Image (cartoon, rainbow, N blue to C red; front, side, top):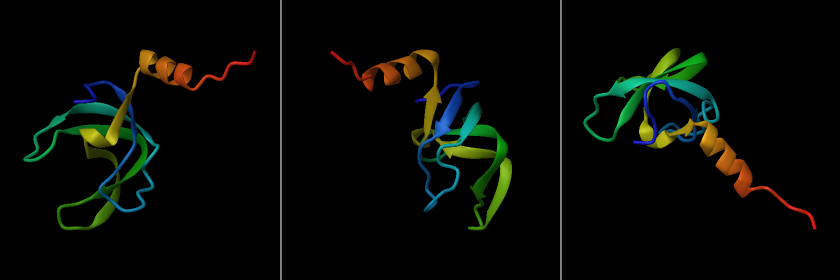
Length: 90
């Protein structure tokens, strides 16, 4: 799994078309039992668009998100990403 409890993570994908939550930062709370892929319960300071089992959509500050749609934010990861894209001048 990409994340672990208490991680900050960026939402990088969704099962919803044109999801306005992509790019939002969430706090990973706990693993959520799932029949398919690994999922996390997350919390966000701004409302997230949440799909309900009935097919309805609503906004909430907590949601369940598949691990594959979350990219954890960790000090070393951020540093490595910035270093990869650094441009040097001669």
